[in-house]
Length: 155
Image (cartoon, rainbow, N blue to C red; front, side, top):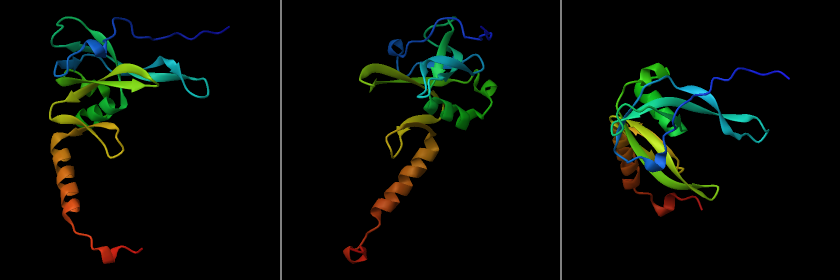
């Protein structure tokens, strides 16, 4: 039997349910894909994007965190595609209780300064630049204010 060397992240994992929304944090390592405990429909192992993080209210302790897609996209938008650039920037912790497959869990979002978490038009969490979000709301308001005549409806 052949084996491959594993590069699993060691150390303590952050528990989102024990974190307080509003706490500041910093990523202190590169983010790397790691095998998760979940599998794809074809049986292959899913990957998760893991980094080390420190929380302002737990000085000196480093925790492993698996970054969700909303957090990853927010970090990419704020700091670029290289995860080295994500390090040592202040992030704000935001948690959300939800159910996944019937199980109560707490999601963790790491939000860069000047950004906020909103729900997109399909109800998915996204992290956007606060200025851009205001522009989007103004565009939606302008659209809502336009009057549509009943005679313009083709049926």
